[in-house]
Length: 165
Image (cartoon, rainbow, N blue to C red):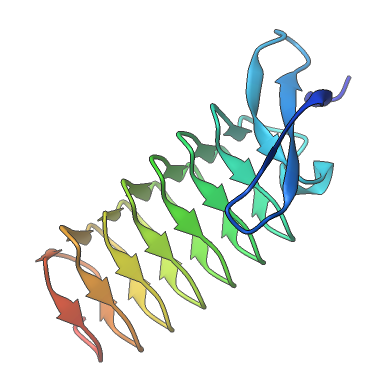
C-alpha cells in the first residue's frame, strides 16, 4: 500500500507559481501538505509533509524529516535524517538540511548551504557554501554566506562570511 495518495481536487499555487496537490496519508486518511510529484516525498519511513507546506521541483524529503507550517522546499534541496522545517521557511537550490536540524520562522536556506547535526536556523538566511553544523544556532535575522562554517555557538543578528569553525 502506498504511503500517501493525492487529493486531486485540492491544489494550491506556490510562491514561485508552481501548482502543487494535497497529499493524504493512506493508512489514516489524515491530510498532509502539498507535493508537485510523488518523487518529492520518500515512500517509506516516517518523513512527512504536513499542514500547508509544499515540496516541488526536484526537492526531496526523506528519512524521518517533517515539513510543516507553510514552508516551501524546492529546486534540488534535500531534507532528511529527522530534520524539521516549519513556519514560512524556504529551502531551495542545492541546499541540504539533515541530522536533527531545525529550520523555523522565516528562515531561508539556499544555494549550496548545508545545515546538519542538532543545529538551529531561525528567522535567518544561510546561503552560498555556508555550513551550519554541530550545535550551532543562527537566529534573529542573521545572514550567513560564502564559505562560512560554524559548529557551535550562537550567531544572533549578525552578518557572517568566511570561516568561523
